[in-house]
Length: 444
Ligand SMILES: NC(=O)c1ccc[n+]([C@@H]2O[C@H](COP(=O)([O-])OP(=O)(O)OC[C@H]3O[C@@H](n4cnc5c(N)ncnc54)[C@H](O)[C@@H]3O)[C@@H](O)[C@H]2O)c1
Image 1: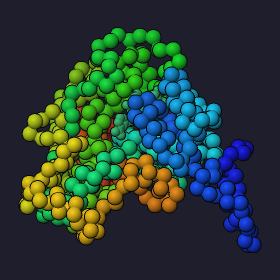
Image 2 (image 1 turned 45 degrees about the vertical axis):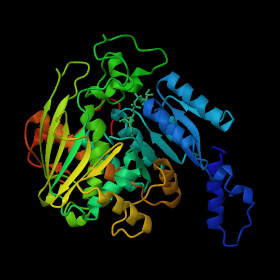
Image 3 (image 1 turned 60 degrees about the vertical axis):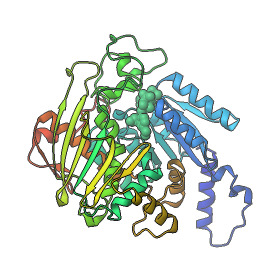
Image 4 (image 1 turned 90 degrees about the horizontal axis):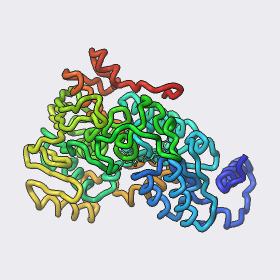
């Protein structure tokens, strides 16, 4: 039993709802500054992005980071020290095993910023334990994990925010609003431009020999459900994304950003693509260039995924083809709109000023949700129980064409996708590639 602020709040609330007589409670229990009024957060995975996510939670006064989990002691200690310095106490607890953090009853929400192969298991465990969840993109390592995550969140009625923060940025919202409000007419083609090759984020290069596990790292737990491979520094922190055992290369690293934005623009039901959480392809074919599968970095260096969406909309997802620019570009009979980080243009530039002015006046026919900030919105949604901008079902649909594109590029076949049943039609080998092969004892 934890005698924690939240446990106290929960018992007070129980008391309140159980008793018929009005209770007079001291205001310090519920005032804005009362510890019991803060959303308690536990952060799982505090490497590169996780450390940034932690900073974003620490900047919000109405949440309290009370626990950190990482399998690398150095990352864990740095994060715990940072939290304790921020709050001026020693209350933040460190864990190596996320199951212990999730078991704490006083934690309201968890943030999952582990490598891609380590999203689904903690996310589903957290949903089943009644936590609200912030989880990084891409949602899952294998397509069927995403389906299971959506189910677990729905079954447990959890609030979910994905790290697809571009939806919280004005330029991306204005671009999607131009498209949804019909400035282009009915969209016929969308181009999604992603990076190609490999980016040496970890600064290790790609050719180091296998070596000893660094001290303070639990490599068995880091590997988790992935295949156990010898430790190699080029497949570890940050650079795990360039090996299919743990990541999905540039295609999957970016699909949750730019394809997510592309779908946002298409989510006007008049385009026949379905509502925001059901936009998706009917047919997917793809070509990619792969290094030797046994190389340390073995993810595709160049790829092109051609998708047919309902209503004859063509969606091209490309990396390394100069005819497709970075970001998302929608094309219709009246012109085009293109958006990327730091870039927002259109065939008719006056549209941009117009959509901003109409939004200001509250006169847009379709006004997309204006985020107060990606983490602010998550905490607000935890309180209001309203769906966030990037709930799990939207994130799952945003990355589905990436998963299907990868499978199509490996099998060399055109895949037919039943978006309602979420099944590849008539291709057993491709369907099997949707499933993760998890190393014992881990399972979904
Ligand atoms: N939203 C964005 O803009 C953005 C940017 C970068 C990365 N990401 C995503 O964030 C996630 C993490 O990527 P990164 O670049 O920060 O990787 P990273 O390797 O820098 O950090 C991952 C951290 O998770 C820890 N970890 C691994 N297994 C764990 C486990 N079982 N329990 C607890 N901790 C564990 C590692 O020790 C490490 O500290 C990925 O899914 C990535 O796609 C998102």
